[in-house]
Image 1 (cartoon, rainbow, N blue to C red):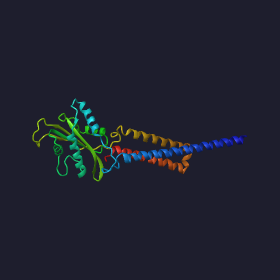
Image 2: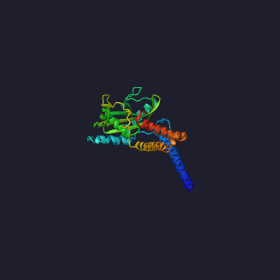
Image 3: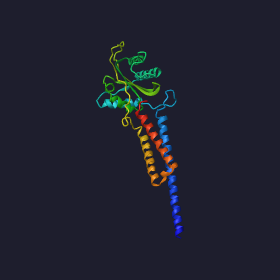
Image 4: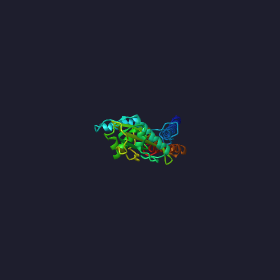
Length: 280
């Protein structure tokens, strides 16, 4: 009788270990697959492999959001909100297209065109005008935040001489690599149409690039990815602890699966970090 009970208990222990091994194996595979999917989203949807000629739209700052966030900053100082002007938007788009064609990122084009040349070409006769440029941003909130942290860009956004604005964003090949570029054209039209004067006030903001900062660039759009990564990482660490408790750390198969899942998860984090914090 005792031998039967021992046999049953032994079988129960073996069954429990079998289930434990299968459970850990399943969690390893699941964590590895989900981490791989997370990494893939950062590579293909996050813009790391963005191609300006691709039919897949890259992640770009939204013009309407940029204007809205800029106006929130202006309203805090009781400054008249900016209104989108189609001519300024066309000027910003023309400047962006010129940078795409000639692969540069500057207020002055290689052939000597200045920002006001793009503005007046669109038939916008201004009394005041300005331009902000940014590179490497994929969200409206981060690009405006960076501009507000720059004295010259902040001066443009908070300039009460400007009452109209135009925005354009797109991919530009710079030094052989694709980069997100945003053009912000400010203006105030003349009340009376007169011949354009060369000395008409025009303000240029220094070009803006994001700083490599592990916290600064994180926006609400990135939080879900970080949460998913954190959950997967915690699951993998928990499984690592379980491996030792169950003695499965001696199994080459289980350790290979554990290390593979951990490696893929770390790769996902690196790609996630690069996607939001490093200039592209």
